[in-house]
Length: 179
Image (cartoon, rainbow, N blue to C red; front, side):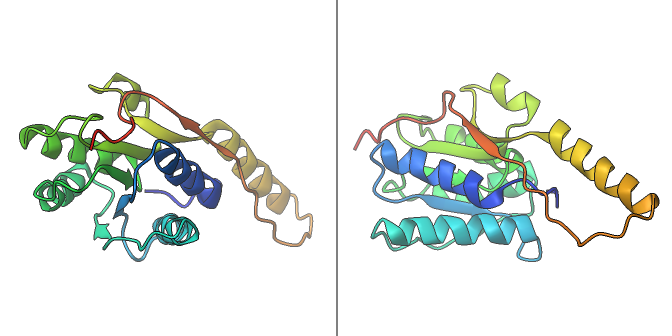
């Protein structure tokens, strides 16, 4: 989890629109902690995007950013064969979900598509490689350093929110629903 100022709204929209565009009729969400601003923004954007598509959002399953919590969430979801797509609020929870689905004999992406958020380096090397929202951490870091240096230099300025764009890296965990 992080409080880095990436474009949480744009990233979540990209994730949900990708899955809707593949033909999924609804998308489940494994959310981050309720006290995390990025988690709250990602979950509310997911919910609003589904509502705009005329879809009633399913019940959120909440995790704590860890792969373990994604695995536990996955164990709650695997019993429901109607689930074809899950948007995870970060890659670690998506990794846990991937394991839970595999153990239950559910194929990713044929049975269930998964999109993560953060595009961790390891995500491209999973089996299958994880589709994920990429945040430009180098640009985010550079912007934070610039803001801190300006504060140290004593330049009075109005507080600004720097928003760094995100992009969707489409890999092997997403496909049209098979049923």
